[in-house]
Image 1 (cartoon, one colour):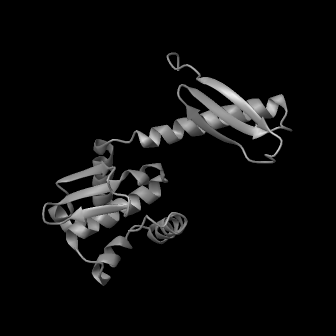
Image 2 (cartoon, helix red, strand yellow; image 1 turned 120 degrees about the horizontal axis):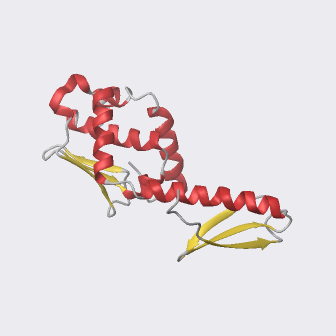
Image 3 (cartoon, one colour; image 1 turned 120 degrees about the vertical axis):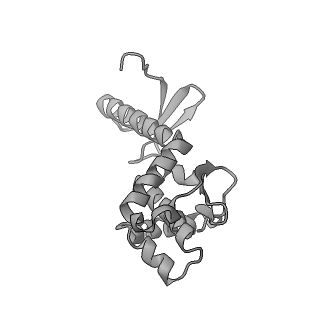
Length: 175
């Protein structure tokens, strides 16, 4: 990429840090925290690795409502196509005011809202949350018919386990 420039990086070494490496943005600068015993080559390798991770994370955070709707359309086609327009939402969007649940659906007006907290999660978890909400357009409650629709997604159990783990670590978040 010719137009992209590498950010200013500040490396902080710590004698207490043994194996872990972390990085965060501080304004326009990226701070990378590494163990003091790392060689210059290891430092360089980890700086590049952490810059890539930050870029990937920021790319996930930049996900748009249009991309979310496109993802929902792919999921409808793959798992709910036999329900025709019943599975088609009027809107799908990211929201920042939903901290107590991963997503919500209002079947009456066919709107789906997905918490911004899900943006940083793996794609297969986002897909699960979206399919869960799409299934509510067909079956509003959490009954056996609803769960049968959700189970069409092959990673549903894995995604539910992932979300349960996050909810256990951060109790304010639930379905």
